[in-house]
Image 1 (cartoon, helix red, strand yellow):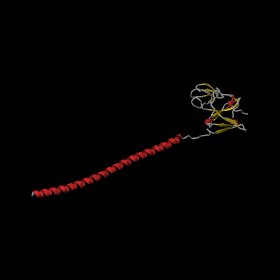
Image 2: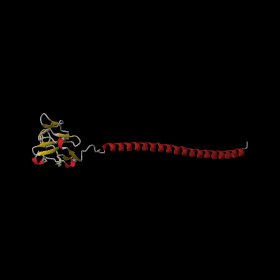
Image 3: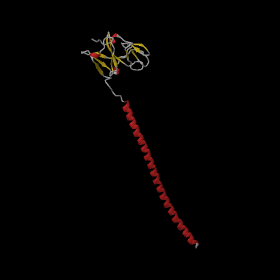
Length: 196
């Protein structure tokens, strides 16, 4: 074969091969970009789906937590409660316990008092001990007299007093709003509301 033909065939074949390889490279790089875009798109979708699901769960937990800690007003505590004259104890009689209002009504020689039943030490409910005629805190042993004065235990003062007023029919209205509680070191005769 003639060297000239070989040279021309080599140049022509080289040119065709270079064009073919360049076309394949362009096709391959274009295909590679499509795969990269698809992978990027899949990664973005997965990331966004995970973040969205996490956001939904956190929002639901936040709403549930808010509902749980939102204060529910149950019963009549926090407002005014009227107690009928028929349940007012006799002088030094067994205290009347109002479950909804969280107080005891005691009747001393000076009048009546509405004692908040929460121990002033750490807030335990203080029951009346009929046998000893005292209020005994079951948590840490604070003891209070009938009129609310502290006589023993870690408590540092008397039971808190709820403001009360006597109505014309002999019933008593007690203000159970915690902001209106009267804190006192001990019982004083003027703490009692005169009762007919």
